[in-house]
Image (tube, rainbow, N blue to C red; front, side, top):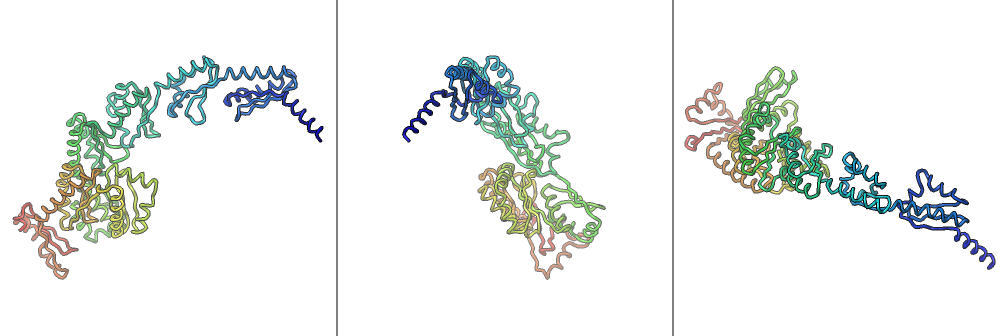
Length: 547
């Protein structure tokens, strides 16, 4: 047994003596193997013949041959490959890789190739891996570092509605300006919705800071965004953009833009001028008269012709409603028209549509929240029976279903919004009899101008809704709305009758409205009757006239 062990040991020693092992960088193994194994196969046929193994994981190359000269020849050839394929690294940002490998990097790639150096990108995209002699790697590294130094890339996220403003002004656009002022290249990447800025690190940092300031405000630059009701867009833009041009002319240094695929308007410029421009727009939007149409089937036409729904809805919403052969045309202030359309559609198809308007930034945040977790709306839908959807183009939440269910859903949604935006949504309760005076768009627009908050009458919930990204602005607006409400209560006298006294209303109205018209004319007041509530409201511009 001992003799056998000695024999085996001798054979192993003899075998090992015929093996030469070389440790090389693992990155060089592919060059030793060659394309399709050509290089390593050529080693195997060298001299007296040999077996060659190359491990790309450990970087070990093993050469086995009984002929020492053959092993030495192959070893020298491997060492030569290693000498010609030393490894160097140049750090690179992932965003710059495309430039090095693309058209902008064509010239530097050619120069590196002329040196005789090869390079590729590491598996983790953090560095360029260079192969060549030490001298070649040193030269190529300098060329690549110099290219990278002037081709750092930074990206700025762009909201969809802000895309057009990037190019507004042609040669004076913000992109042209940062290129000229900072010596960088700035391009909009539509697929990613980003502005990509390329250049020296210090310069691109300054350029991106300027773009961010232009888009979001800061350092004296103000940016204001708010939603414009669909029907009022024409009043804002004007024929051929004339109204926008007039605003930019009147408030020099201000840029006004309406999004292509949304009704979000943005105003940018010096802080004081932006506020003045916003005030004018708020008043324009609030008082703009718009129209909307409901198409009718013959059955619907007959149904609505035989009822007084058009008269009642017109009275409730302060709109003008015309019944045509195959349609209903509603005219009035935007929110009033929207409410009238909802009430008429409820009568026609049994489905009511309510709205909760949002500021542009609030709408974006709600959209992002729902993208991550849609259960918020799903729970409200399940508990109320109303359908709920976010309309990003109109910056509002749309609630549809039976009107009672819509109201329940809107209450739940207000809780959701208050959780997301503490104190940014507040309400002031208003009795139905004061809808006409409290819904007057001019005073509400004046409150919005003074505070920066959006103010609107919500007939569904019998409240005035106040909203703003700034909770302080919301609180200030609520105070003014409450003052307005107190004033309206003094200028309105409400007479409520019992149901059995409903016969009084026709007497007050008179034949064809003659009696009520005479009372209004003689007393310089306005008199509204509400049949459903058996109520009469007398309004005037002074307490004396009301009394």
